Each structure stands twice: as C-alpha cells, then as structure tokens.
Amino acid sequence: MARQGMSPPVIGLIILGILACSAFVYYQIIGGIKPTATPDPVAQTPADPPPEPRPTRPAIEVPPLDASDEVIRSLAETLSDHPQLAAWLAPEDLVRKFVAAVVNVANDETPRPHVGYLKPAGSFKVTESQGRLIIDPQSYARYDRVIAVFSSLDTAAGLRLYRGMKPLFDQAYSELGYPAGDFEPALLSAIDQLLEAPIPTGEVEVKKRVMNYRYVDPQLENASPVQKHLLRMGPANAREVKKKLQLIRTALAPG
Image (cartoon, rainbow, N blue to C red; front, side, top):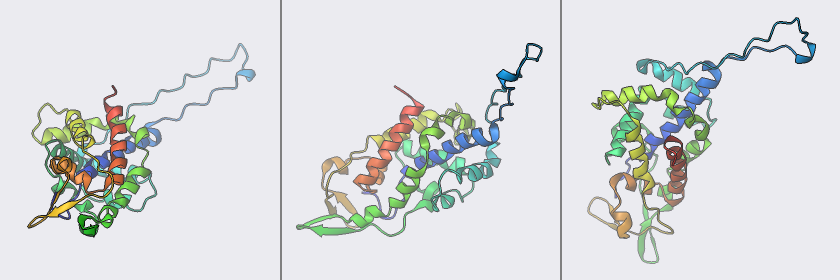
C-alpha cells in the first residue's frame, strides 16, 4: 500500500471538474452576448423592416496561461457553495498543476508534489475485526469532504465546453516537454488508470509491514500505485469517483 498520508492522485482529476465547469460558466456569463430583442410579430406591418438577426455567441475568449488563475478562481467559486472549494482554488498555476498531476497519474507516478496541499486531515488507521487487521473506516472518512465537493459540481455541463479551454491544457502540456502539445491522450490515460482500479466489498484486510501495510487480497495488492491511492479513499468513495470519472471519460471520447 502507499505510504501513510499521501494525497490521492484522483484529486488532480477532480480539478478537471472545476476547470471544465469554469469554462461553461465563462461561456454563459462572460463570453455570451444577450440576444437583441425582436419586435412582436403581431405588431409588425408589411412596411416594417425585418427584425435584426440574433447574434451568435462568440468563441470562448481563453485567457493567457500565465493570467488564467484569476479567471478560473472567480468563475469556479460560483459552481458550488461548499466552503472547501475556495481552498482548492487558492494555489497559483492551477492549470499547470492540474496538467502535471494528470501526467503523473498517466505515468503511474504520484502527483503529490503538485497537489500536496490537498492532503486530507488525519492519518491512516487500522483496527481489528474478528482476529483480522482491517482498514479503519475512519481512514476512509478523511476523504468524505473531497467527495462532497466533487459531487457538488455540475461536471456534465462543464465538460460540454471543456474543449473551449483546451488550449491552456495543451500549452501547459507542451511546457512539460511534450512538443506535440495534445494533452487529451494523457488525460484519457490517467482516467483509464483509475477506472480500472478494483473496488473491494466489505472489510479490507491488511497485514503489517515494517513501515506500512499490504493488502491480503492479491487483486488489491497487485493494483498499480495510483490505483492504490484511489483504494485508500474507501469502497464507497472510490465508486463515487469512478462514476464521475466515467462520465468525464464518455464526454471526452464517446463510444
């Protein structure tokens, strides 16, 4: 199992919900133009000029990457009334941190250097049940707040306009040494890593090692490092995350 206290990489993907929904709100509130009112058809006469055509919405005006934090914060704060959301948006370079975290997950590496500020409170705990050592449910509860924030975001609406902000993600991806600059394959790979994670049912038995623990169930113990981070959130939380990630996956690459 992963070391105690390490942040789950799934939080980097959860930020996608915030950023994608920000694109949706940006388009609706800032990028959109209110249509010009047309005359009442009944009041028109043949001599009246034809009504002006309704203006089309312009494309989203994507801010420069170096100046994107303020736009994302101001818009993302309207997506949920959960008090924890503001803390997630406090750091600088949100897009770069998100992209770096996703690339780490896609490469089966911990994104802790980029999302360490989202580390849950408390520590990993075990307890005994019928002579077995199992993960204490209190360990899972540390992630309940993360799931509550995630669940409060309208990710489905935001993802419809995810591609409107895609130039920011591609630019940040290129800065990491990927000259092709298409971030989406890395994002899909990271999501797939987590969607393939096994989800246990019932109590999860572990055995003590010198510095940490290992799963007794071989399927769980043989899961990839990033999948084990997801497992640490607990079965119920992991299922909720996977449900959301599947929605994101389908929206990005239907079929």
